[in-house]
Image (cartoon, rainbow, N blue to C red; front, side, top):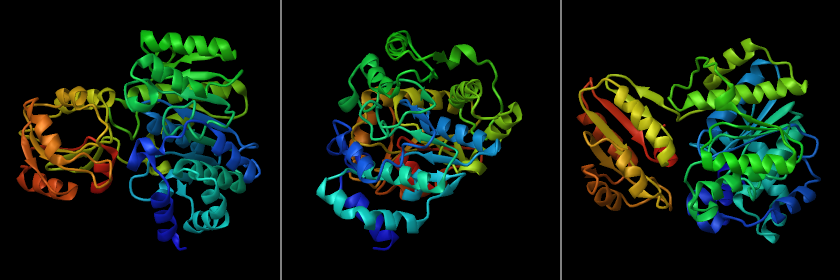
Length: 406
């Protein structure tokens, strides 16, 4: 199979949480451990930072990778989901895995995948570990797909575990309370391995303290410990806490003595994060006159910060290109959006996308009014045609809406 056929097979043959939802969620690590054994445990000799959290884990992972690249290390980076191309998920020093490697990995192991009904995530994690092992990386930043305890990435023992924050998202899998979600994510904390917490609440703090006590893990609350706020190419207000989390994680690595990282490496890593890693979709400006911003924030915790940031902008009229997936709690996120805006409702082009008509009806209950469009690009094009040069256009609500405008 060529690359297109290979990725089509990966997406279509097996459940992918991001496209299908519940049917892709596995309840234990049996398959991942089986695959690891079959591949001869490629993850065993690698060094890791393991990053979980409801929001900010992608940005934090990319900030860490960029800093370590600035320090001269060969850095593997595994993240999800991708925006345009599957290969974005697996990079070394900002360079995506080759199409050839993806094709060969699937071709060589396809019969095993099929016989054991491996999920998309399990196969992709196996691919990442195999690639990083073959390429002899110095360190690897591994972002959790969802949750933590049962995530396919959770067969590694990292140098440090990182949990960015806890908010309500994917509640049908992780539980309805902040404590239950925190317990799932705290499942990445390993025996005697230090853990960095980005943000916490009174409910989640006690979960982390109890788990760290149980595993004899030194616990660092970045929001309390870090005062610096270095400038970064990532401009969203929510990046302030992600930067603190990354700095605290680097300090832990420095204390361990395995990596030589200077303050200049941290500063340059933050400034050059987009160039070093290729991160997209985080308060990303696509145009000016009118100013066009896209952002992947998609739950109340992230959207609250984004909404506040929009209100700080100067504009004549506000235009919102908005689409969501069908498992979002609209009663929780729609009140966060400004009423003084023109809305262009659309459905991201994936099976989990919520019909734009339903979104429009729900939004009207919160005095958010606008028309329905048959595609994201149509909604975006109409917004651009209607917007004056002093207006502000925002595109978001879902990672998959952003992916269609990039």
